[in-house]
Amino acid sequence: MGKEILFTEQQIEQLKEKGLIIESNSNAKEILKHFSSFDVIEVYEKLFMKDGRFKENITIEKIFQFYHYDRSIQNILFKYTVYIERVFKNKMASVISENLGVRKEEYLNIKNYILRNDSEEIIRNVIEEINELSGDENPYILFKKVTFSKMTSLYDFLSEEIKEKIIPFNFFQTEKMEAKELFRNSLILIRKFRNEIAHSMNFVNYKSKRYVVFRYLKKVLNEHGYLKLTNKNDYSKYGRGSNDIFSMILVIILLLDNEFLRIEMLKELAFFIKNEDRERFNDFAKITNLPENFLERINRVIDKKQKNN
View 1 (cartoon, rainbow, N blue to C red):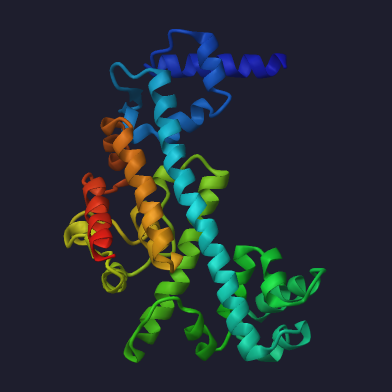
View 2: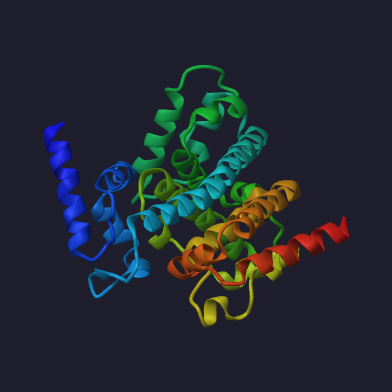
């Protein structure tokens, strides 16, 4: 305990030396239970620091308030990624049952999957792990126990024909490759961002190594009535919508595959942004590269959807 107290006091002194205003050491110690000085400097540096020092009038309480704001938006997004995981697993169960069978010996038969020399071991390990799960072998029940990552891997090795049946949006035959790439990369992007929410404080700065093609994503969103969440300058001028938080929000909208849930998520985001300090959202948009007029975009989509119902 003594070393823990000493370490916390060292963090407080480090933050003070860099210009952070800390009027109460006891309050600072309570705040530093939630994150370390290293997190503050690394994660929020772009927003609160310049040339290695905190900007004028920045207090540890202000940073903690922003941290809480940041986490609140993350919690909204996280909730809807859980819906997506369930939708994906149910669709996998439905299509696999119909095409491969409902018994393990049928749908986990290695002969039903496309083997590639460089990654054959991956699918064999996935099949083995699923096979070892106990309980009802019905895919609708068993797949609930399989991790999102393992289910994505199982999808990867299905035949191209079966993969196309799992994609939750319509596409022309001439777009098959684009559609499969968008769906696959969207699943990975959501999973990666969700891991950041669950295990890291660096969500606001995170960029996925796997990206979606913004042009095609916009086209599909337009077919569902969500084009107004975007504009022509998002990617070309601001570089947003491919592997960032903005793209995460857009692919959640795409993959929820349910109008009620789509609108509910947008309503939750709009309510939170509207009822919290607008300056705080501007700060959040600045650090994440979200559109500053994102609330207005959301409201336009909600209004149009409600008029059409």
